[in-house]
Length: 108
Length: 112
Image: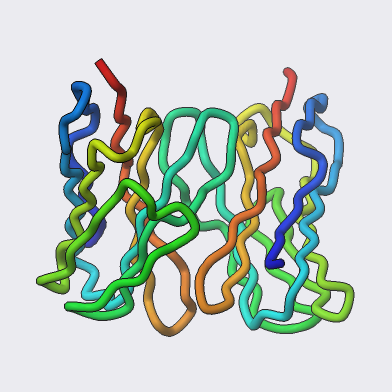
C-alpha cells in the first residue's frame, strides 16, 4: 500500500524555537514535495526534492531527503508566528500521494 | 498572470442535484487533478488527467465525473450519487519538468 505518514500531526511551539517535521513514505519515488496551506486557503509549493541527500532552504525552513530511509524532514529554525500553517509532504509515483499534514502553531 | 482559476468559491447543493465545479488553467500544463479535502484532513485524489481527452479515476472517484475536452479546462461534476459531498475541492495542474503542482483557490461545497 502506498503510504505517506507525517509526524507530528499537531505542533505548538514558542517563537524562537527549532523543530522538525518528519515525512515517512512506503515506496520509492523520484520526487518529494513540501507544501504549505493557510487556514481556509489553497496549497502553496515550498520545496521539491529530487535526489538522495538533497537539501533545500528558504528563510527559516529547510527540507532534506534521504531516499534510502524513505524519509524527508522539514526543519524550522527560530520559528516566528507567520510560519503558523499546515504543512504537507507529497510523493510522486504514477500519481501524487499526500501526507496527513502537520498543523503548526507558533505562539508569540 | 498565469495560474489556476476555480469557480465558484462557494457552492450549495440541494438533495438529488448535480453540480459542476469549474477549473481553468493558463499554465499550458498537460496534467490536471481534482482533490477533496475534509476538515482537518489531507488531500484525497478524485480524478486526474495526463492529457486532453483522457482521464483516470483516483482513490475516491465514486459519485464524481470529469471531462477533459480542452487542455485548459477540467470541470468536476458532483453527482447525486455522492451522498456526502460537503468538502473543500481543490484543482491542480503540474509541469512535466519538476512536477510541482499548482493549486487553485478551491471551491467550498455544502449541502442545503
